[in-house]
Amino acid sequence: MTGALGDWLPYRVAGDGPRLYCLPHAGGSASAFRPWLGRLAGVEVCPLQPPGRETRLGEPPHETLAGFAADLADRLVADASAAPYAVYGHSLGALAAFEVVRAVVARGGRPPVGLVVSGCAAPQLLATTPEGVSDEEVLTLMRTLGGTPEAFLADARVARMLLPRVRADLAIRNSFRYQPGPPLRLPVTALAADADPRATVEEMAAWRDQTIGRFELHPYGGGHFAVLEQADRTLSLLDRALRPHLGAGAGALPG
Image (tube, rainbow, N blue to C red; front, top):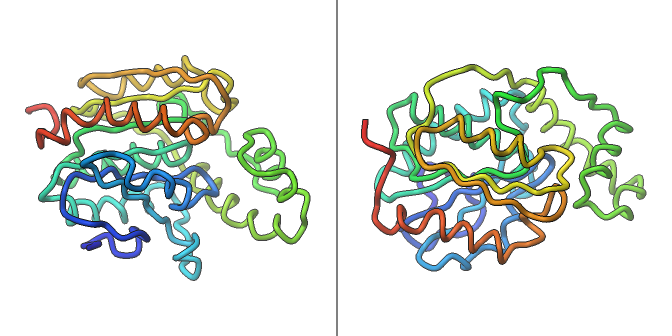
């Protein structure tokens, strides 16, 4: 069943048990997490599909991070009222996950039992200088980050398919302006790659300032997509970080 999330869940969800909602990187889609399906025992991995991607290709993408977060938070508040859940996001997905969790809390919804982030500096550190979104700038960024075969980037036809969704996500990122607020009252886990040009280990460590709950930092060897390339380790860390809370049905720290 998909409940209030509807098209945000492109893959069948088997039951109403604990869920791990996963938000993809800029230009990414729910299929980035498809290899994780069925690999966290007792936990339903739920890749989230933003509008404008794959199964939602005909829908216009969100133009701002605030709009994205509000839309998804409204659905999570309605969908996640019964079973415990956690949220994971990579790169832009990490920033989106943070804003979604904030929006859920602001709405008085049931908060997640944990937030896991990777590939994104802590939000209070993010510069407000807009990134360029010309074709050349986007392709240069994609080459810098890796994760996309050079054959795709060099093929003009394939590049024309990839560029609009990456550009749309960069526009969402450029809309972000950090607003200080109360720290989260739930565990936060940061997965930090030591050669990530988008987020140093130190910048990932600064996520600790966003919660009064438990904070854990796990370093990786590798670049921006190390967490996806080293899926076995990532899934093991997710299990370690979330299972005590998901299994017990525990929520955020008491007020």
